[in-house]
Structure formats: structure tokens, C-alpha cells
Image 1 (cartoon, rainbow, N blue to C red):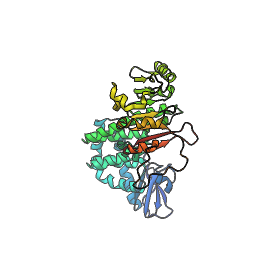
Image 2: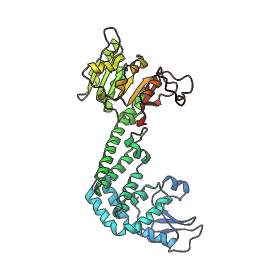
Image 3: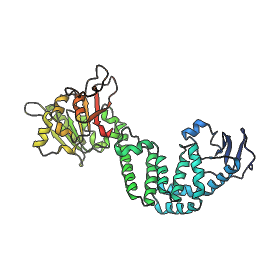
Image 4: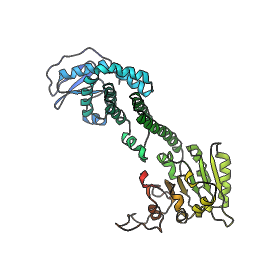
Length: 398
């Protein structure tokens, strides 16, 4: 984003449709209704590049003299803009405060030229970051924080993340910009906003770590949804294969209650636990009853009579060796504390149509029973993959 100033090549002649001149490292191009400046060497200012934000600094003006003046003003402020940006990304509040103080005399003149550039090319990151910083320097704190947050990659998802928006994709660039925005909020005394941004940042960092582990895993629908995993505080496993359950601690999930469907599966869970559990893991294994049935066939009764709280876990995962519908039918109280359910189901024979207006869901099906409990299907394994898993979530989380 830094530009090296160079002597002006031309002064300000009258603009024409083919005019292309250089001023202090910027190429000045005639456009409809005025002039546009883009860094020399940054390529031609094609409309599709500007629309996608695939360029560096962009400035616009109605004529060449005004454009040259705006270039001069930007270059005068650029060292302070860059120093403030770096300080915010590093959470160096004293340095950022010094940068804003140095920008204050120029802020009111810089803001209009940056607004014009932003309106012409709203996805150019350096323009919007500079606009946010300049607004802070001018005392327009709400406007400045809006632009700093708005420039965050995937920002539509960032705005929705506190509503547990799914398919949320974090990135190092997004985290870096969140740090800068949180630092700016703290700098101007908006501490509640800073704390909310820091909470979001912590969740995003955890999600990146989870996604890194998930990239190496295959064979279960849950491994494709790191955005769900970051919201899981504990898992109820019913009839899930031992090697799948054993992965959970590596994903930061340390509270597991695993119900074995058979005696053999219980032995496999015990062996897997000895190999995989770290000291922080609270992994409880529940063997089958003397009759060979899993106690999960009456989850409500089991939790009511035992020493465990159903609310310690918010994901219920049901394997292929147990009757899903029978388990859910006797888990209505347990489901009140569950946010996500993963169940093995056959592929629908036809289009899955919602109930007609005024008609209640069919509780004889897994989907209908979960719908009555406030769940909606949000994902399923790819067509042809067996066993077919379906992920349900509470409607308010989708």
C-alpha cells in the first residue's frame, strides 16, 4: 500500500477521453464524468478490477487539477495513515493515538476525497481502512468503526456471527482486521464494542484451529462443519464408532458421554479412550444393559436418575446401529438443551416437501419429530455417501 513519491511529469492540462498522465507515482486516467488516479504499475483501471477491489490506491476527482491536489494530500498523510494502521493491528494504542493526533489537522480535508474514492471502488481495502482511520481522527467514531469493520474479509458473515451464522469462514486477514477494529473501539472508549469484537476474534481463532484439524479428517459429516464445532460444549454419542468419538478431544471438545450400542462397541470405546483422552477430557462411557440394549433408548429417564446433567452437552450424535426415532421419541426433555443433532437416515425417496399450511409435521419420521422440537435440517452428506448423515440445528441458530 505504500507509494514512493516521484516528481510530477505534467501539470494540469484539460482532460480528454484519451488522457493518461502521471503525477507523483499515480497514473491519471480520464473516465466518464471526471478523472481517476491509480498507482503507476498497478495495471489499467479496468471497471471489473475496480469493482472487485483488485488494486491499490484509487482516487477520483471531477478534473485533473483537483485530482493532483488530492494525490498530494494523500501522500502527505500516507505515513501517518500507515503508522496508525500498523499500530491498530498490533494493538499498540499509544502509537495509534499518536497517529490519529498527527492526522487530525488533515482529517476534514481527507475525508471527502476518501469518500469519493470509496463510492467509486467500495471494495478497495486500503481506501476503506484509510477512511475509517481518518473518521476516527476527525472524531466521527461510529463512522470510523463502521468502515474498519466493513472492510473485514467476509464481513457479511462477521456481522452475523453473533447470531451463530453457519458456513462462517474465518481467515488470518479477517482476524487481523478484527484486531484493528477492536483496538480502535478501545482507543475511542467504546469498551463494550471492543469486548464484543474480541469475543468474536477468539471464536474465529478457535475456528481456524478446528478447521485445520478437520481438513485431515474424513468419514463424518461433523468434520465438514467447523462453524458448528466451535459452538459445541459437549457431545452425547449414541452408537457412534469408537474411532470417530476419539477424535473429539483434538477438536477442543472435552466433555463426552458415549452410549455403546453393543458390548463390543463398549470395549472399543474403552480402548480408544485409553489411547486418545488427555487429562482435560471428561469422557463418560455407558455400557449396554444386561439385556443388550443401550440406556440411550430412554435418555430422559437416564438423566433424571443419574449424576449427569443433560445440559452439559449440546450436540446429540446418533450412529447407524441404533433406532434413531426410538431414541428421539424418549428424549424430549433432553432435546430442550440440545442445539445440534446428527442422525443417520436413508435418502428421501422423493422431494422433501414442507407440511401444508396448518398441517403439523409427521412425528412418525425423524425429521417431523425434530421439527416439532424446534429443529431444522441444515446439512447432509453428499449424495451416494453411506451411511447418509443429516445435521439438524435449532431454527434460531440457522
